Length: 103
Image 1 (tube, rainbow, N blue to C red):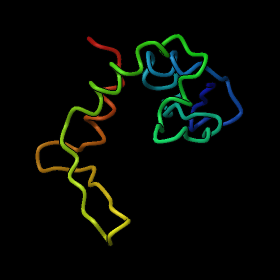
Image 2 (cartoon, one colour):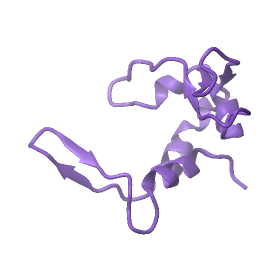
Image 3 (cartoon, rainbow, N blue to C red):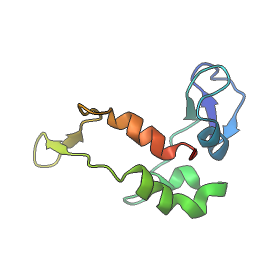
């Protein structure tokens, strides 16, 4: 999976592993995948890790990144959404930290 900076959509491209390790692109932009792969049955993350060095560690990454509560507010019987903000800390920040290199 190749990633590119939101500030430089024409490149340079880096691997997903490099994007995770670097955090921010040199130009200060966020790394995003060059395309969004189709999800496998019930698994949204696995397609991003195909042929990546971290493929073997996906389960550990998933467990550590998603180990916080994410309450769902059901909009109807089939559709729900989860808030990415709590009074203590934005969940998006917690999620990002889970995918960042350990200090």
